[in-house]
Image 1 (cartoon, rainbow, N blue to C red):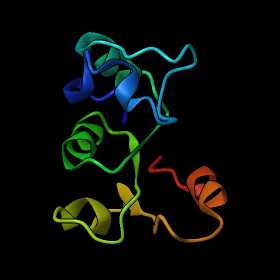
Image 2 (spheres, helix red, strand yellow):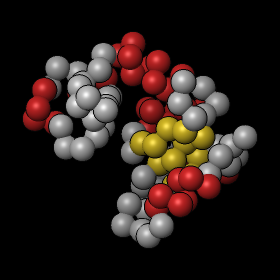
Image 3 (cartoon, helix red, strand yellow):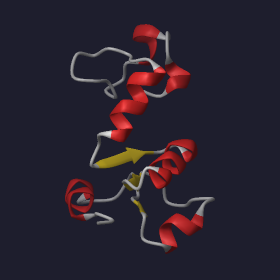
Image 4 (tube, rainbow, N blue to C red):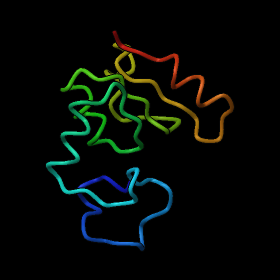
Length: 97
């Protein structure tokens, strides 16, 4: 994920389609502001989905399994198979509110 704090200062080497609208890598504070003001968070990161849980955001995780099953059982997170079909419609339909 281009906006992940671990990718800060890695430049063009990691720009593989997960970039902000300008193609920029943003800093940690900008990243957290995006999370705070988002409606949904789409991730494949375990730490990001924990942040989504704390922020009470709908979290869509692009994985077929998870180590944090409580968020799925509480319907705060949805797992999506990255090789599946209708991913966009599943993302649009999922909400915790």
